[in-house]
Amino acid sequence: MRIVRVDLHVPGQTAADVYRTLSDFSRYPVLSDSVRSVLVTEVSDDVTVSSWEVTFRAGVLRWTEEDRFDRDALTIAFTQIDGDIDLFDGSWAVTEAEGGTAITFAARLDMGIPSLADALEPIAARTLIDNTVSIVDGLMGGAQLVSSDVAVPVGSAA
Image (cartoon, rainbow, N blue to C red; front, top):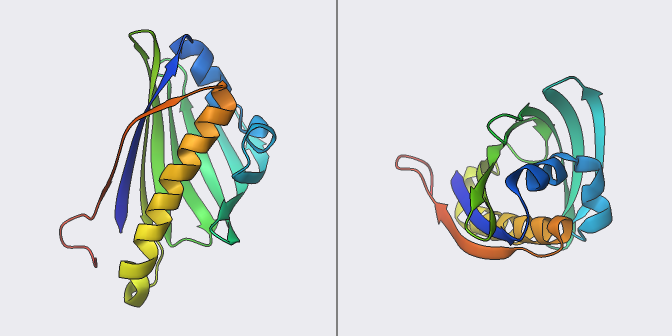
């Protein structure tokens, strides 16, 4: 299992505007080359179910996730409920920052193939970071990568 964290800065935009844009999954395929499709199939006030197709190296990853929106805290939490990856969950957090808005994306992923974890998971983590930066940059019309990190939790099959 890998834990990925990406911190970004969006200059000149408020946290509320960035959160609103980030929450509109239907725009992702239009504004980001890495997202092939997003289909939101269930919608309530603070929960959606969405199905995703995202470019992964020379192929496509597919999954369905439950998304929980907290508009007051400007966060989105997601949990994969079905898909190509064994485990994929995480969150987006948006906060005001000097000169714009800070976005933190954090996720756990486990490809579910222990014998290939050392080879596949670093590639998946790097691709997730690259796709996250691409998505935010495409959605916001400009975003700066502040930092990114990949960790292997103690006790997991590295």
